[in-house]
Amino acid sequence: MNHIPVFWVLVASVLAPLLGEIPIGFKVPVVVFEVLLGILIGPHVLDLAQFEGFVLHMFTFGMATTLLMAGMELDFGAIRGKPLVLGIGGWVLSVVVGLAVVGAMHVAPRVDAPMMTVLALCTTGLAMLVPTLRDDGRMDSRFGRLIMASGTMGEVAPIVAMSVLLSTQYSSWKEVGFLLIFLGIVGAAIVAGLQTRPPRFQAMLQRHLNSSTQMPVRFSLLLLGTMLWIAQSFGFESILGAFAAGMVVGQATRGPAGEPLRHKLETLSFAWFYPFFFVGTGIKFDITALARDSTTMLLVPAFVALFLVVRGVPVFLYRGQLAKGEALPFALSSAVPSLSIIVVISEIGARTGSMSADVSSALVGAALLSVLLFPTLAAALQPRPELGT
Image (cartoon, rainbow, N blue to C red; front, side, top):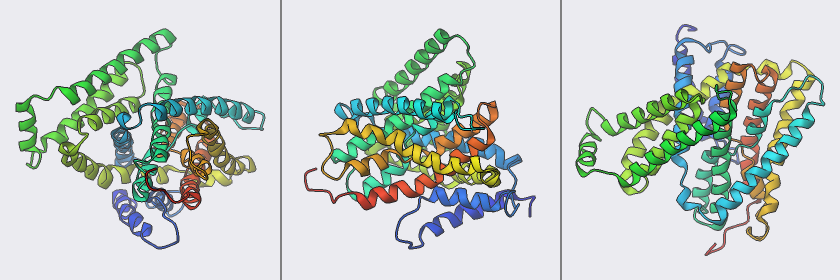
C-alpha cells in the first residue's frame, strides 16, 4: 500500500469533511482535519504515504492554488476608506510588536526565530473568517468590514513582504524597482480585466464555459502560470505571482456574470489541489519534533499566545469603531492565522535554511491549534448583531 500514496491522500480528503459533520458543539475547519489525517497516514505515524514523488509535486501545485484562491477572496472596493486605513495601521503595529517579541525570543536557549517568523505571526486567515461572517450575517456590517480589512492586510502584506525578503536580487533598490514594476503589471492586468472586455472575446469564453475545452478555466490557469513566471523572472518567490493571479481573476470575475467561472475554479481547487496541499502538509509534518525536547514543546503554546498578542494588540486602534463587547472577538478573529501562508513560510524557511526544523514544526502546530481555538472563542464571545449594524 505504500506504493499508492495518492489513494491515502484521497481517502483523507473524503474523511475530512465527514469528520467535520460530527456534532461536537463547535465547527472545526475541514483543513485542520486534512492536516491531522495527513499526519496520521504520514511516515511518523502509520507510514502509509511518504512526502515524495507525485505527492510532492501535487503539494507544490496545491500551494500555488491555495494562494490563487486567497487572492480571489480579496475585494478592496468593499473595504475602502476607514476600514482599510485601520487595517494598514493595525498590520504595521503588528509588525512592530512582532519584531519586539521575536527579538526577545533570541534570549531563549536554542531558539533562532528569523524575520520570517515575524511575518508568520502577522498573518490573518481571511479564508477562515469569510464563511463565519457570512453564516452570522455580519459580512456587510461595520464589524464585518473592519474584520475583512484587517484580514486582507493579514493576507496581502505578509506575502508581499516575504517575496521581497526572499528575493534573489541583492540590491535593495533593484528589489524595490522590480516590486514596483511587478505591482504595475498586476494593476494593469486588473484594470484590463475590469474594463477591457471585448464582446467577441467574452462571447467566445462564454461558449466554451461548459464545453470540453473549458476555455475560461484554462485561461485562468494560464494567467496563474504567467504570473508565476513573471514573479520568478523578477527574482521573487512564486507565491507572489500566485497571489497576484488570484487578485486579477477575482477582480475580473466580480459580480453575477463571473460566478460560473469562480464556481468552476473553486471546484477544481477545493476538490483536487487543496487536499494534496493540506494533507501533504500533514504527511511532511514531523510531529515527533514537537516532543524532541522541552524547548520545542514550549514553542507551540508560546506561538499560540504570540499569534493573539501580535495580531490582537492593534484592536486598541479601533476604539470608537467597535460596539460594546466586540473588542475581544475582533482581536481573536484578527489573530486567526492563515494556515496556508504559515505552511508556505515554514516550507520556504526549511528549504532556504533560514528557519530551523523545530521552529518550523512549532509554527505549524501552533497555527493548527490557533485555528481550532480562536474562531470558536470569538463566536462564543460575539454579541448578537443588532439591526442596522
